[in-house]
Length: 258
Image (cartoon, rainbow, N blue to C red):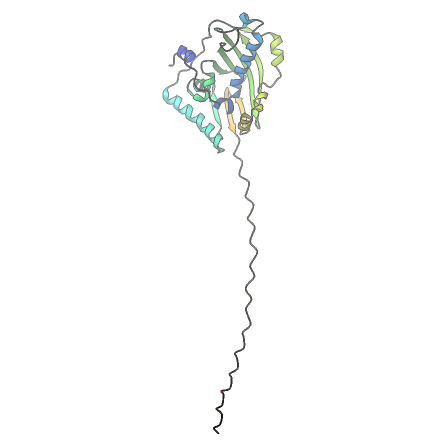
């Protein structure tokens, strides 16, 4: 079992974009919501919405074989999408997602900052504990809260809507929630060309039976190459008519002697 403190305080791994670009984008949106709450709270109610200590997040226990199998399933999908090859749908439980957060380099942006659950209404719920050292006037403080979102993707269009949020165990004020409810929190993702292109490689993301199902779009067949133009037939060489043989010339007669 990986120690919780080690997960939280280990050096930040090199950032990757696997999770952000290939599926569980709603999980990253949870962090975007959190940062929005931070910007809204700083300068207004810093003490109310932040704390001096991080929240203790749950850590899942996985055997090494289970971790390896999970990472292989994830990478198989990612690599197939990158190469434009066919891929089977990927089904992830909340346990799988947290296992990837803890062990996969593609998910390192969430490591130590988020714990994910999927409730009976198939909403993605995330607990977050984010250090605020990069924000002015908030060094040494943490944003500890949770949010619930509805996530779906159809024909490359990702829709993420906020259904609820709380900070320090208390619901957020309606003033803030009203600004977010009804908005597609993922709309700005399409401003990044690379992200939009990879989203178009997914046919659907569904949340059902307390699982996230990532369904890749079948690769588009290459357009048939136009046939090469045929060379026009070459005319057959004309045969010359046979030439008449020259008539034999009479032999010269010797002149008579005088």
